[in-house]
Amino acid sequence: MANIAESIKLLGILSSGRKYKAKELGERLGLKESSIRYYIGILREAEFQIEAQRGAFGGYYLDKKSTTNIILKIIDETL
Image (cartoon, rainbow, N blue to C red; front, side):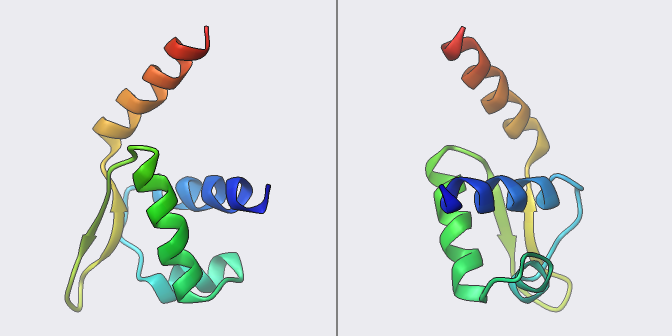
């Protein structure tokens, strides 16, 4: 159950539209950077488009358009 809760919390943070370094996400969620990468992997497996950009101004961010499509797909499949 913790995987789902942590993944949802991470998704909520990433939905802000800005880029986050793994270290920053880890500090916000009280997790190690390796755990952040693990939960990002879980979200990617669920077809959420979490992008990563390298460099000083890089970080993880969420592609909002594709995320909206996935949420609508999930709702449609459960109804």
